Length: 271
Image 1 (tube, one colour):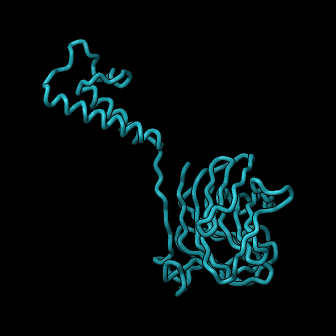
Image 2 (cartoon, rainbow, N blue to C red):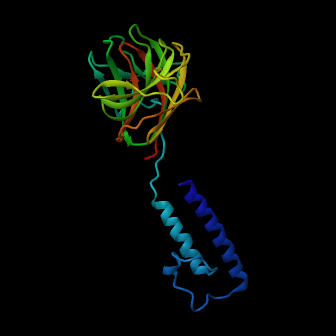
Image 3 (cartoon, one colour):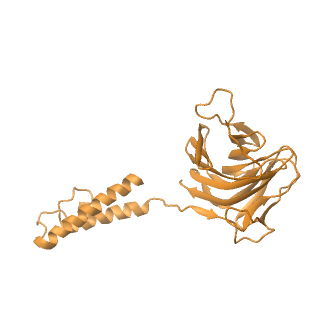
């Protein structure tokens, strides 16, 4: 799209220059000049009608490309104590259902509200998720600010993307207990770690300090087989996965009995 935009800008500047010259010369187009409807396929020769046809054709082509606008959600307009509209609460494998609700947090990055998973009870293999229903994409850019508060069996929180359902999705999670950031592919509820580019064989994710009670920004960009992960605006790793990809939703995730807050969720659909 960037390349097309540049070509459009150059063509538009050329059209303006040609029209400016015509305004002083007042010379009509030659009689043998092809009609405007053919000028789209030919090199522009300086004729005003050709300029407008070429510019119009580029404008139409540019406008016909898919355009998506990023969605930002800070939960401040949602009613406290309830699941925000447009979101689905679910979980992977077993255990009691999670409790995803909007809560007040005076320390929220964008006060006053956050999205919280505040159920402090859950089996070790319970993985609560809250999925944003209004965007489904194959490639995108998702980010969220998260704060891990507590957990006996888990102190993990992250973002999911390409989620077909609660048992098929991709995940990047940060762990305050293991002090690392790891990407997973989840298929039929089974977790498989995706190797990090350039990491020694057999390693999982990357080591990174994560503190309970701190707000952090986790961002994931994904296109085709490549995923890039950022933590607090710093690029921490790239990962490649050749498995077939399908479009899906994005959202937030926790593990077991982890209590965590989320704010400033952002999803930018690319494809």
